[in-house]
Amino acid sequence: MRASGTSGATVTVRVPAKVNVQLAVGAARPDGFHDLANVFLAVGLYDEITVTPSDALRITAEGHDADQIPLDGTNLAARAAELLAARHDIAPHVHVHIAKDIPVAGGMAGGSADAAGALLACDTLWSTGATREELLEICAELGSDVPFSLVGGAALGRGRGELLTPLPVGGAFHWVFAVAEGGLSTPAVYGEFDRLTEGTAVPAPQADPALLAALEAGDAAALAGALANDLQPAALSLRPDLSATLAAGTDAGALAALVSGSGPTTAFLVKDHQAAQQVAAALTASGTCRDVRLADSPAPGATLA
Ligand SMILES: C[C@](O)(CO)[C@H](O)COP(=O)(O)OP(=O)(O)OC[C@H]1O[C@@H](n2ccc(N)nc2=O)[C@H](O)[C@@H]1O
Ligand SMILES: Nc1ncnc2c1ncn2[C@@H]1O[C@H](COP(=O)(O)OP(=O)(O)OP(=O)(O)O)[C@@H](O)[C@H]1O
Image (cartoon, rainbow, N blue to C red; front, side, top):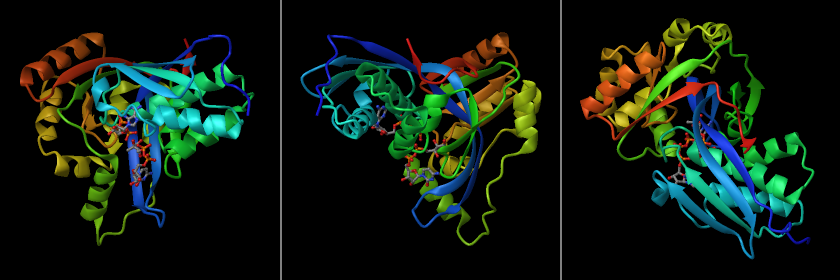
């Protein structure tokens, strides 16, 4: 096994959050996952992952909600470092520092971003020579959303969301995010989807051509008309209070509103930065969320800082 230290070098990677502009969910598969047509869009809220050679694998975190993530081997960033190291016969002796800005357990793929960031940072630090395909394979092992965190931009995720096809985006889209009190467990939301659809024929998930065309054209009004999240009824069933947040944003002039992924963060598509300020102010005044964030899309994937 080769030593992992490279003369005190430090590598920093910046990784975006995501919103699912379409999340079409099929029936549960025998392995417990659901087949998806998952249209990911990376948004400009970022976590920053810094890795430094150390005498053992160590995780530290700072920033918003940093106290809510585990600092042991269950942290997805630690698992990413370990998986890459094991494949390349390297000792995973690295200090991974996570500067967190993506809401935790909010349906914005914060943990997935940290995993993709740690993977790219360690790969750079250790000069493993891994191909992009190998990194994507490790990402898929870490979680369904992790490949997209590496790639960024916009992409259609098939399978359980890990099989990506990049999508063209013809312009900038502006978003306001309302961060809810507490979090929602992703398996619990998929479980609630199963409960709500029990006894019905769940159709095979398909990407909506009108939504893909709106993305390609950079047409916010058309995208607003096509936004869809099959997990939204399940998230609202577990968190009925989110309806008031959705209403507060649409009443304030958002083009459209939806639950972000498995929630409980809610996402508001707006026309421009002025509308974003207006919707953000109304959401804050509504008292229906604990924080409000503005972000543009698309954003690049995991990038060396
Ligand atoms: C809701 C989304 O964020 C939308 O992008 C993702 O589908 C969830 O992706 P993720 O958090 O990376 O999820 P994973 O860590 O792969 O899986 C966590 C759990 O979510 C459920 N899960 C996840 C993905 C999927 N296609 N079907 C599922 O049923 C399963 O119960 C799984 O055990
Ligand atoms: N590096 C990490 N950052 C955030 N959460 C992590 C991390 N590692 C493990 N976790 C755990 O994973 C759980 C999900 O957190 P995360 O922020 O990824 O949720 P999410 O944004 O809803 O994910 P997704 O949108 O992919 O479903 C949390 O309960 C947290 O304790």
